[in-house]
Image 1: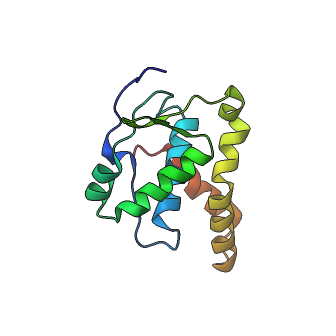
Image 2: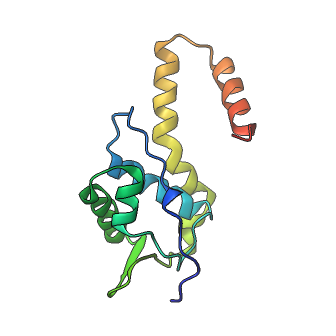
Image 3: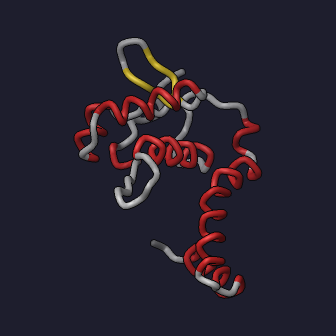
Length: 135
């Protein structure tokens, strides 16, 4: 497999104000970007050192994320050259698979909405506005 392009370090956006571990945030973000088509098979991942330095996290955190992604078949190791995005079966790019990736987040929003006693229509209207915004 040839390298399509070198991915920038800023493909990861880490939130420190959440209970989700940083390595898990990285794993889920990259999976979503691959399934969404923003990251393609053959793209070269930034080095562990670059990502750790840019995000201000421990290199072991980045290494753990990369290792999990490799074990699950999302990344492939190139001997002496680092990681690339692995070739995936087309079944993983179906809309249903992509929807399942956001289900946990939506379940959390639903729970918080119920706890706040918000009307479902109000929550759905806000969500629609957020989806349509350019931010």
